[in-house]
Length: 96
Image (tube, rainbow, N blue to C red):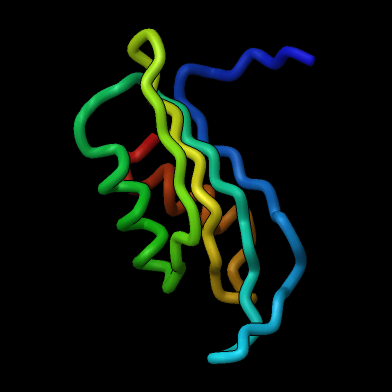
């Protein structure tokens, strides 16, 4: 299956519903996918947005292909944060 993505996008997938954390309250886990034209500062902006929302980056993969940057992160976020809140924050950060 092929999908055509816009030149700039942030897509969020909820990997699992709330998960118990032995060291604290329940959290939500999301897969965050960012795609944009390659330029300096994308990783800093996106990771900063995640940190400002009290999130944690569990895993990350990134690549540049033909001038386009793709970043995929597995992030652990507070249980009351929605996927839309995360997407909006990432877009506002300038990472997209």
